Length: 111
Ligand SMILES: [Zn+2]
Image (cartoon, rainbow, N blue to C red; front, side, top):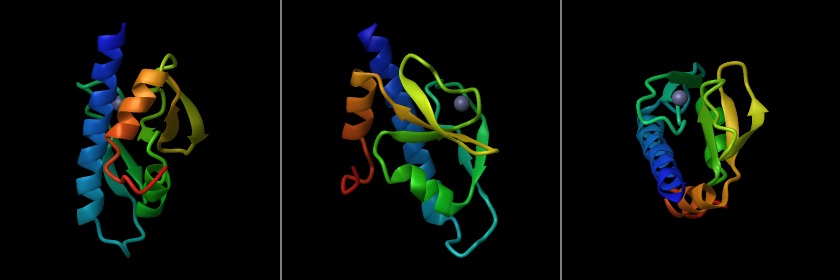
């Protein structure tokens, strides 16, 4: 259902905004991993994923890619493009969801 896809896309965009704030306050020269929130479509998800700022920046370089806890991907809207030990990177494939997350991209300069 379309409404439900809009809701999931909005949830993911909100988690992404939270992570943007986390990345802003993280120490840029800190080699250790930072704790981010899982950016999956489940509004009740409280999982944390660890990634370095460099890894995080790689995810944010594309307006349609998100990082989430392994297994949290939802096959009908996204596909896993990269598997790290601690998190997976997914790309939104479903047209509605993809359009919304790109429109809400906090970094309009990126793809
Ligand atoms: Zn999750």
